[in-house]
Length: 252
Image 1 (spheres, rainbow, N blue to C red):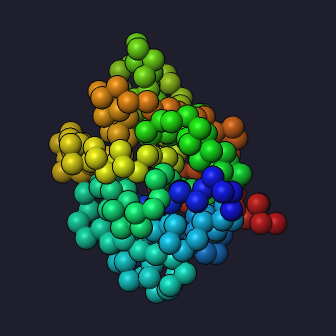
Image 2 (image 1 turned 45 degrees about the vertical axis):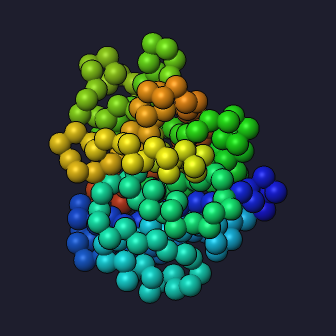
Protein backbone atom coordinates (compact mmCIF):
# COMPACT_ATOMS: atom_id res chain seq x y z
CA UNK A 1 0.00 0.00 0.00
CA UNK A 2 1.18 3.50 -0.76
CA UNK A 3 2.20 5.26 2.45
CA UNK A 4 -0.02 8.12 1.28
CA UNK A 5 -3.09 5.94 1.82
CA UNK A 6 -2.49 5.13 5.48
CA UNK A 7 -4.87 7.93 6.43
CA UNK A 8 -7.46 6.88 3.81
CA UNK A 9 -10.54 4.75 4.37
CA UNK A 10 -13.27 3.65 2.00
CA UNK A 11 -17.03 3.25 2.24
CA UNK A 12 -18.96 1.09 -0.24
CA UNK A 13 -22.66 1.92 -0.56
CA UNK A 14 -24.49 -1.41 -0.57
CA UNK A 15 -27.81 -0.85 1.20
CA UNK A 16 -30.26 -0.56 -1.69
CA UNK A 17 -32.78 -2.90 -3.26
CA UNK A 18 -32.62 -3.96 -6.91
CA UNK A 19 -36.27 -4.04 -7.96
CA UNK A 20 -35.62 -2.96 -11.55
CA UNK A 21 -33.12 -5.80 -11.94
CA UNK A 22 -35.65 -8.32 -10.69
CA UNK A 23 -33.79 -8.63 -7.39
CA UNK A 24 -36.77 -7.98 -5.12
CA UNK A 25 -35.57 -10.41 -2.45
CA UNK A 26 -31.89 -9.43 -2.24
CA UNK A 27 -29.69 -6.32 -2.16
CA UNK A 28 -28.99 -4.88 -5.59
CA UNK A 29 -25.23 -5.22 -5.06
CA UNK A 30 -25.59 -9.00 -4.72
CA UNK A 31 -26.90 -9.30 -8.29
CA UNK A 32 -24.60 -11.72 -10.15
CA UNK A 33 -22.19 -10.12 -12.61
CA UNK A 34 -19.78 -12.40 -14.40
CA UNK A 35 -20.66 -15.21 -12.01
CA UNK A 36 -20.16 -13.32 -8.72
CA UNK A 37 -21.95 -10.51 -6.83
CA UNK A 38 -21.26 -7.16 -8.46
CA UNK A 39 -20.09 -5.64 -5.16
CA UNK A 40 -17.41 -8.32 -4.80
CA UNK A 41 -15.42 -6.66 -7.61
CA UNK A 42 -15.30 -3.43 -5.59
CA UNK A 43 -13.99 -5.32 -2.55
CA UNK A 44 -11.31 -6.91 -4.74
CA UNK A 45 -10.29 -3.52 -6.15
CA UNK A 46 -9.88 -1.98 -2.69
CA UNK A 47 -7.78 -4.92 -1.57
CA UNK A 48 -5.56 -4.53 -4.65
CA UNK A 49 -5.06 -0.89 -3.73
CA UNK A 50 -3.84 -2.17 -0.37
CA UNK A 51 -6.66 -1.17 1.96
CA UNK A 52 -7.03 -3.40 5.01
CA UNK A 53 -10.09 -4.73 6.83
CA UNK A 54 -10.30 -1.72 9.14
CA UNK A 55 -9.94 0.67 6.18
CA UNK A 56 -13.13 -0.14 4.30
CA UNK A 57 -16.73 -0.69 5.28
CA UNK A 58 -19.77 -1.91 3.39
CA UNK A 59 -22.83 0.14 4.31
CA UNK A 60 -25.62 -2.42 4.34
CA UNK A 61 -29.37 -2.18 4.80
CA UNK A 62 -31.94 -4.09 2.75
CA UNK A 63 -31.53 -7.86 3.31
CA UNK A 64 -28.13 -7.14 4.82
CA UNK A 65 -27.83 -10.70 6.12
CA UNK A 66 -27.30 -11.91 2.53
CA UNK A 67 -24.24 -9.66 2.17
CA UNK A 68 -22.88 -10.66 5.56
CA UNK A 69 -23.38 -14.36 4.78
CA UNK A 70 -21.38 -14.00 1.56
CA UNK A 71 -18.45 -11.94 2.85
CA UNK A 72 -18.35 -13.05 6.48
CA UNK A 73 -15.54 -11.37 8.39
CA UNK A 74 -13.36 -10.46 5.39
CA UNK A 75 -14.96 -7.00 5.28
CA UNK A 76 -16.29 -4.56 7.88
CA UNK A 77 -19.92 -3.43 8.00
CA UNK A 78 -21.96 -0.36 8.90
CA UNK A 79 -25.73 -0.73 9.18
CA UNK A 80 -27.99 1.83 7.52
CA UNK A 81 -31.20 0.82 9.25
CA UNK A 82 -33.20 3.65 7.63
CA UNK A 83 -32.78 4.24 3.90
CA UNK A 84 -32.18 7.98 3.82
CA UNK A 85 -30.10 8.34 0.68
CA UNK A 86 -26.51 8.14 -0.48
CA UNK A 87 -25.17 11.04 1.60
CA UNK A 88 -26.71 9.50 4.71
CA UNK A 89 -25.13 6.14 3.84
CA UNK A 90 -21.71 7.77 3.38
CA UNK A 91 -22.12 9.57 6.70
CA UNK A 92 -23.09 6.33 8.49
CA UNK A 93 -20.04 4.63 7.01
CA UNK A 94 -17.73 7.49 7.97
CA UNK A 95 -18.98 7.55 11.54
CA UNK A 96 -18.31 3.81 11.85
CA UNK A 97 -14.62 4.06 10.92
CA UNK A 98 -11.72 4.31 13.37
CA UNK A 99 -10.82 7.92 14.12
CA UNK A 100 -7.31 7.76 12.65
CA UNK A 101 -8.40 8.07 9.01
CA UNK A 102 -8.60 11.63 7.64
CA UNK A 103 -9.68 11.00 4.04
CA UNK A 104 -12.60 9.02 2.71
CA UNK A 105 -13.24 7.26 -0.60
CA UNK A 106 -16.95 6.61 -1.24
CA UNK A 107 -18.06 4.24 -4.00
CA UNK A 108 -21.28 2.65 -5.17
CA UNK A 109 -21.36 -1.11 -4.85
CA UNK A 110 -23.50 -1.52 -7.98
CA UNK A 111 -21.66 0.34 -10.74
CA UNK A 112 -17.97 0.28 -9.81
CA UNK A 113 -16.97 -3.21 -10.97
CA UNK A 114 -14.92 -2.06 -13.96
CA UNK A 115 -12.62 0.43 -12.26
CA UNK A 116 -8.91 -0.35 -12.43
CA UNK A 117 -6.97 -0.12 -9.16
CA UNK A 118 -4.51 2.39 -10.66
CA UNK A 119 -7.42 4.67 -11.61
CA UNK A 120 -8.63 4.85 -8.01
CA UNK A 121 -5.07 5.24 -6.69
CA UNK A 122 -4.58 8.23 -8.98
CA UNK A 123 -7.95 9.68 -7.95
CA UNK A 124 -7.10 9.35 -4.24
CA UNK A 125 -3.66 10.88 -4.73
CA UNK A 126 -5.05 13.85 -6.65
CA UNK A 127 -7.60 14.44 -3.91
CA UNK A 128 -4.93 14.51 -1.22
CA UNK A 129 -2.61 16.80 -3.17
CA UNK A 130 -5.35 19.28 -4.06
CA UNK A 131 -6.55 20.07 -0.55
CA UNK A 132 -10.16 19.81 -1.79
CA UNK A 133 -12.87 18.98 0.73
CA UNK A 134 -14.63 16.89 -1.92
CA UNK A 135 -13.48 15.40 -5.22
CA UNK A 136 -15.62 13.62 -7.79
CA UNK A 137 -14.56 11.15 -10.45
CA UNK A 138 -16.68 11.98 -13.49
CA UNK A 139 -17.31 10.28 -16.82
CA UNK A 140 -18.44 11.42 -20.27
CA UNK A 141 -21.28 9.30 -21.64
CA UNK A 142 -22.59 8.99 -25.17
CA UNK A 143 -26.12 8.81 -23.77
CA UNK A 144 -26.34 10.50 -20.37
CA UNK A 145 -30.12 11.07 -20.45
CA UNK A 146 -30.91 9.09 -17.30
CA UNK A 147 -28.29 10.86 -15.18
CA UNK A 148 -27.64 14.27 -13.67
CA UNK A 149 -24.81 16.37 -15.10
CA UNK A 150 -21.67 18.07 -13.87
CA UNK A 151 -22.25 21.79 -14.34
CA UNK A 152 -19.72 24.61 -13.90
CA UNK A 153 -21.25 27.75 -12.46
CA UNK A 154 -20.28 31.21 -13.68
CA UNK A 155 -17.71 31.45 -10.89
CA UNK A 156 -16.16 28.18 -12.10
CA UNK A 157 -17.34 26.13 -9.14
CA UNK A 158 -18.66 22.68 -10.12
CA UNK A 159 -22.05 21.45 -8.98
CA UNK A 160 -24.09 18.39 -9.91
CA UNK A 161 -27.58 19.07 -11.24
CA UNK A 162 -30.14 16.25 -10.99
CA UNK A 163 -31.66 15.17 -14.30
CA UNK A 164 -35.10 16.49 -13.30
CA UNK A 165 -33.69 19.99 -12.79
CA UNK A 166 -31.61 20.32 -15.97
CA UNK A 167 -32.19 23.23 -18.31
CA UNK A 168 -32.34 22.54 -22.04
CA UNK A 169 -28.79 23.86 -22.35
CA UNK A 170 -27.51 21.67 -19.51
CA UNK A 171 -29.06 18.59 -21.11
CA UNK A 172 -26.40 18.91 -23.82
CA UNK A 173 -23.66 18.25 -21.24
CA UNK A 174 -22.37 14.67 -21.36
CA UNK A 175 -20.30 14.70 -18.17
CA UNK A 176 -21.87 12.96 -15.20
CA UNK A 177 -20.93 11.41 -11.87
CA UNK A 178 -19.47 7.92 -11.53
CA UNK A 179 -20.57 7.88 -7.88
CA UNK A 180 -16.93 7.73 -6.75
CA UNK A 181 -16.09 10.55 -4.33
CA UNK A 182 -13.22 11.49 -2.06
CA UNK A 183 -13.86 13.62 1.02
CA UNK A 184 -12.01 15.22 3.81
CA UNK A 185 -13.70 13.08 6.39
CA UNK A 186 -14.09 15.76 9.06
CA UNK A 187 -15.72 18.05 6.49
CA UNK A 188 -18.31 15.45 5.48
CA UNK A 189 -19.17 14.71 9.09
CA UNK A 190 -19.46 18.43 9.82
CA UNK A 191 -21.71 19.36 6.91
CA UNK A 192 -24.04 16.36 6.79
CA UNK A 193 -26.30 17.57 9.63
CA UNK A 194 -26.72 20.86 7.71
CA UNK A 195 -27.67 19.22 4.40
CA UNK A 196 -31.11 19.63 2.89
CA UNK A 197 -33.01 16.56 1.64
CA UNK A 198 -33.57 16.10 -2.07
CA UNK A 199 -36.56 17.94 -3.44
CA UNK A 200 -39.77 16.07 -2.69
CA UNK A 201 -37.93 13.28 -0.87
CA UNK A 202 -36.78 12.47 2.63
CA UNK A 203 -33.41 11.37 1.31
CA UNK A 204 -30.03 13.08 1.28
CA UNK A 205 -28.13 12.81 -2.00
CA UNK A 206 -24.35 12.71 -2.03
CA UNK A 207 -24.33 14.95 -5.12
CA UNK A 208 -25.62 17.75 -2.87
CA UNK A 209 -22.24 17.93 -1.14
CA UNK A 210 -21.00 19.96 -4.12
CA UNK A 211 -23.73 22.55 -3.56
CA UNK A 212 -22.71 22.75 0.09
CA UNK A 213 -19.07 23.27 -0.87
CA UNK A 214 -20.02 26.02 -3.34
CA UNK A 215 -22.21 27.75 -0.77
CA UNK A 216 -19.48 27.68 1.86
CA UNK A 217 -16.68 28.65 -0.54
CA UNK A 218 -14.84 25.37 0.09
CA UNK A 219 -12.64 23.83 -2.59
CA UNK A 220 -14.33 21.10 -4.63
CA UNK A 221 -12.92 19.47 -7.75
CA UNK A 222 -14.00 17.16 -10.56
CA UNK A 223 -11.51 14.72 -12.06
CA UNK A 224 -12.55 13.21 -15.37
CA UNK A 225 -12.13 9.49 -15.94
CA UNK A 226 -9.47 8.92 -18.61
CA UNK A 227 -11.07 5.72 -19.90
CA UNK A 228 -14.87 5.94 -20.06
CA UNK A 229 -15.08 2.14 -20.37
CA UNK A 230 -14.17 1.81 -16.68
CA UNK A 231 -17.63 2.91 -15.57
CA UNK A 232 -20.96 1.35 -16.41
CA UNK A 233 -24.26 2.11 -14.70
CA UNK A 234 -26.45 -0.94 -14.10
CA UNK A 235 -30.08 0.02 -13.51
CA UNK A 236 -32.05 -2.19 -15.90
CA UNK A 237 -32.00 -5.82 -17.01
CA UNK A 238 -30.74 -4.70 -20.41
CA UNK A 239 -27.81 -2.88 -18.81
CA UNK A 240 -27.09 -5.92 -16.65
CA UNK A 241 -26.94 -8.10 -19.76
CA UNK A 242 -24.52 -5.64 -21.38
CA UNK A 243 -22.40 -5.51 -18.22
CA UNK A 244 -22.24 -9.31 -18.14
CA UNK A 245 -21.04 -9.32 -21.73
CA UNK A 246 -18.38 -6.73 -20.91
CA UNK A 247 -17.20 -8.71 -17.90
CA UNK A 248 -17.10 -11.93 -19.92
CA UNK A 249 -14.89 -10.23 -22.51
CA UNK A 250 -12.54 -8.95 -19.79
CA UNK A 251 -12.23 -12.40 -18.21
CA UNK A 252 -11.73 -14.28 -21.50
